[in-house]
Image 1 (cartoon, rainbow, N blue to C red):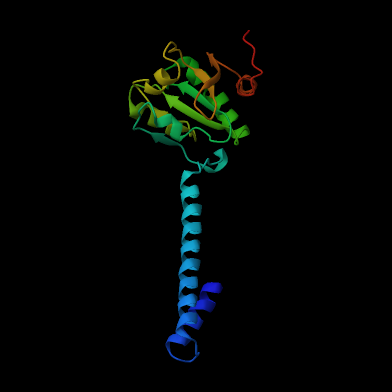
Image 2 (image 1 turned 30 degrees about the vertical axis):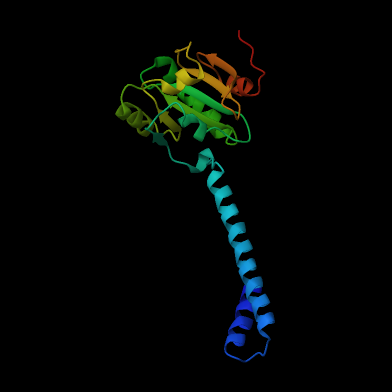
Length: 196
């Protein structure tokens, strides 16, 4: 609104329709430049914050997708900046993992506000892709056949399925290797899980 007002005034001054002293014209032009600069800074800050803010799509409206370019720093791009994140290590060739697939799907569906990331230890990308497609699983998966992410979180363990709860600094708060029920995964996330 102010921009339009100042632009109209500036245009009318330039055309000679409004009489002003040179000093007043200079003050008006400087004021307009300052306003444009402030608005530009404000818009750029909003845009930068928008780019930095992680966006997590609720399960019910997302499609599955696989991230295939893994390095040990990749996971930090997907860790929630506001709350703990659940990371599940899994593979389509693992019988125990296949038994847990429905549990994971139900957990993701029933807890859409918990950032859940599946890290696949499948040997071939196509095996993972086909399994997700054949079973209509809407998971976000990081394909990591070299176990780069697992080594960066816990270099001592390799068993799957395995769940890790990470804080916003990617530090392990809780973990479990082996099958879990949906309630046990939630308990693990909420730090109420007790090994049997």
